[in-house]
Amino acid sequence: MIGGRAGGRDTKMLNAIAVMNTKGGVGKSTLVLALAETLSVFHGKNVLVIDGDAQSSVSSMLMTVANLHKLQSQGLTMVDFLVSSVLSNQPTDWTRFVVRNVSDVDDARSVYLLPSDMQLTLFEREVSKENLHARMRQVIGAVLTDARRVFDIILIDCPPGLSVLTESWLREADFHISPTKADYVSICGLEVFRRFKALNPEMGFARNMGVIINMKDAQSAADEDYHAWLRNDPDNHCFSQAVPRLNSLQDAARFQSMERSYSAKYPGTVGHAIKALAAEVVERMALAHVTAAEPQPIVPQPEHEPQPHPPHNPMSEFAIEHAGLPAGRSDEKPAM
Ligand SMILES: Nc1ncnc2c1ncn2[C@@H]1O[C@H](COP(=O)(O)OP(=O)(O)OP(=O)(O)O)[C@@H](O)[C@H]1O
Ligand SMILES: [Mg+2]
Image 1 (cartoon, rainbow, N blue to C red):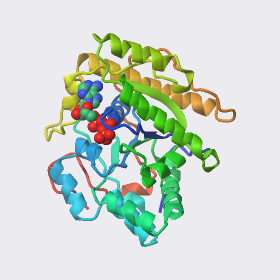
Image 2: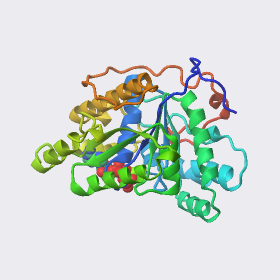
Image 3: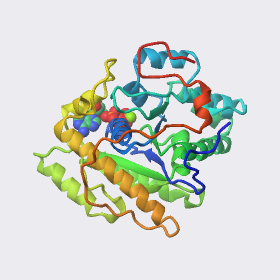
Image 4: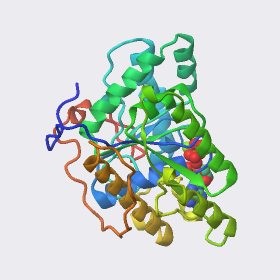
């Protein structure tokens, strides 16, 4: 069972963020990875990454393929949790499926992962066939209610498109962040998403924390035009920091068995951009708490360069410590 939270939080935390654009390939998983590691290293946050995508992209960015396959074959992924709790209607402790100590960045000691599996697609098919949407949403809501108390930030990596599971995350999360490329098709993805959100407001939906311009080519006038166009629409709440298109960020997706430093993984310009972006996320979350009683747009603040910050006592008073969580960092067999 889930226990209380170190630090005794008694109000609802607004810290569950779904990263979503209906368009594929805009950098959702890459930014979830980079933000999770940056928030751990420079802000000392305990970050839970929820992989909501059957492709398991972010799972494979955070641990070795061998360890991921092991968890998948042993029935220890989020999909197994969902099958048990939603399809079989069995009370199931979701914390058993959290993998600790993921990430290949040596200082990123407080990143946790609920890994995915390609069986997620079959699970969703069953949910639709058996009309179990309401139960699924209830389960997702309960996971986030627990997780909000335990983790400082929850990042949900959504697949492209709008699956029934993605809809549940979006309705139960506090915020969504939408990465987009500065091009016409990716922006159309944002528009599809916006229309979907407007369809059933009574069902609840995450608030827009902001749009992130990703893979921006500094030399491209077209990229600058699309960026300006997005920035000028106040509904987008664009993050002031755009992320440039750089090979180092593409390389960051490949998990390395040998740990590396943050600056080796995110060198120079890319590190600067991701740190500024993470600082904006933290600021916008803080601002949302201040304005929670009276929701209003989350205003971007000036960027600053944070310094490394040691993670604080992760999970100290939480039953998750006793759940025998597997470690994702090494090639060793995860200890179950
Ligand atoms: N800023 C960047 N610079 C260079 N390459 C990037 C950048 N951001 C993402 N990429 C690359 O773009 C590709 C797509 O990124 P990613 O898989 O994160 O997108 P996605 O939106 O999660 O895709 P999907 O919709 O399939 O889940 C990957 O090869 C990734 O390495
Ligand atoms: Mg992805």
